[in-house]
Length: 471
Image (cartoon, rainbow, N blue to C red; front, side):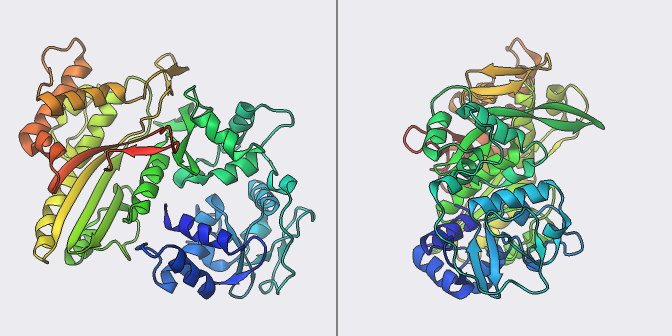
């Protein structure tokens, strides 16, 4: 799990939905609950992470002069401050009120501080010259309060409730940059968590919504993303950022520290000096996900490039493009796959790995660096067809290029010259280039040093979710 989910577990155990607690007490309990975690061990790191999800204190703003800028407190509101240094979890009615206030762009919600209205109070925030004073702890929510469903229609079926919930996020896709806890979906949709889990693992086409997309200055509604289990207790979409969130949560659960969008020379200089992601600020348009675990003389690093679903017919190109971010690739086969001229694959992850391996080994560490290709692998699937309509398909979107990649790794045969379709020949040329220049097949079976793995988030019969390739 990501760090905020670990904090949330502790907050629930301590009953922050019923009475406020201080940060020092909460941090001490967090370390007791998660003794093996490598994140949030310092009070400062813990406080900073929690404060990003508090809806009514100034430190929640990543850009204080731009209070409406995208931020965790908007996409993942979890806590409220009720007095200096005293925090509580938001109740379901408070969460519903807050989301409605944000949707209305209510100015008071964007003030530095404000008081949260009592459950059942008129839906308008009150400005606060100072944080609210101590209040009587609220009573435990009734079952009816816990199922407040601002996005549901009366009498709607389960699928209708889930689709309505997705539609309500038509302008809020960024919420899925993190996993959405199953209990939040249940509260907001008015459906039970158990029945949602059963629906998302029943093997049928999942609920989905078609989001809009801007390309070449034109907006079109052509991105069908489906609701999936992204962890045993959380949901995701098969959108790229959400797929990254699912992988990040699993790596965190396995004891890795993680960070997204690293890869600048400043980042690399810090990593070359010391194997740690602590203190590295997230950049923009860099490498999708980094995960590092250091201990007992070992350093285990993952550098991951991800792809979400694109329109049908572009699967081979998308996989090739991601491979060209991991490894250097010539422009010719990529241009052939795209159908228009484009540049070579920069292969920056390959360069980073070859710089970090010797530097960390010189520090006395046994080092393993894995270049990971992350692709959604749920089935059945929905894709945007060439006829400008949603098509339901039995297999995962990326099944065909992944089958070709697997066959090449197993046998060394790409059939680049014998396939019937031009895109198959071009994809075969991509694989042959990777083998010739980087030794792809050996990297795919290596256990130590530099290696390559394909990560596939998919459904699992027992837990509802698994990440293939992480073992």
